[in-house]
Image (cartoon, helix red, strand yellow):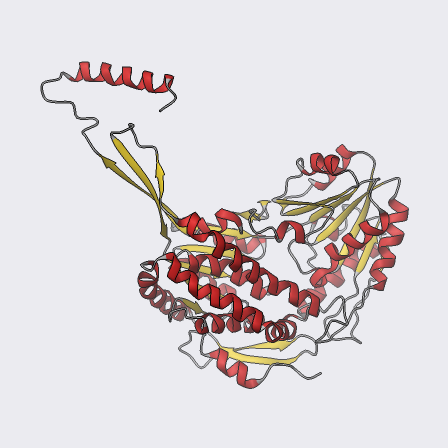
Length: 515
């Protein structure tokens, strides 16, 4: 299969990597297992260089009015749309995802950019606050950029998740040091090239590449805030390291997401929703459904329809829209998925659909797989598979469904399917996840960029999107102006009399609900 990425493009993108050595990292063309790109490797010293260059550039950038920063991202949005096919090619080559998934990934930076272009000025503007004493003290809240933000992005959605953090950080007046996964660096590098074409000043976004355990700590040790997306284990290490420096962090981590299918859900529509929710991006999505709880009265009917819909999915490698599901990203992911399914099968689970690797299609392909009769002693029961594997479980009552769905250390995403949206909403409010989708699996919640998105429990800290998705990259600063002395009575007034007078004033203000 011909790789739709030219060496000229790769050579052009190499210049955005901060590296002082001749060492390189090599990425794989996922569909074939062959070489895709050779890029410079960064060292911990290169990370420090990137941070320092970013810190110098950030001072001037933060001094610009928001309107000037916004102009850059207006142009960037247009460039993303103009180059969407090239970006889709890069995403498919380095991740192996289907073209549909590549297009949907591109939608994230477009939606995020558009949202903060509309709302950024309002969110960042100075706000008058009530002072210590009406008419005596005035207070204003300012939003000050953090400085240099470290963004550590994963391999499954390398463009979407890198840009979802970098765009609001830059718009808020920060510089960014981005560490993408070395396998999937081309798409974020291409986006950075577009940012420069849009007018972003030099050194405001720097890229470092290398093994996470080698340069990741240097990123956390050098920046003023960290945005991390990845595993819960690594996220815990990032949080610990950030805490030691008393800097903030946001973490989007793992999930073992549950869907609840109530007895009044339309079976065909429910099966269609569940299929997309479980197998988008070959299941390599932190928001994917890996557990589906189905009311016992429709369990057999739903299982049959869901398995049939899964079998109809077109699995394959193509740089067009002819395939529904693409490849896993690596041999390591294939190994994990295979081990989870084989373990479940060996311990008595029934395979309703899929259940096999497909080396005839490419080195890392695995069939979308539906399991039933999964028990707690099976690895896939509680551990995140992060692949095209979903398990079905029956339930009898709403309370039982809620208890089962909440029976996990994770809390990222969930779903409720029902013809009665009021009932579904009541159930959704009891689920311990950062996002709950009603009559959908993923897109409705994640695509609502005005609403916060993030996890509870072991699924992370902080939120993307919404006001918090921008304001987390700033510090709140209060400016208070005292117009007349507040706590310093005139020399002729005994302090005891002054204190009684102040107490009376505070009592009156409370009665008037002024203070």
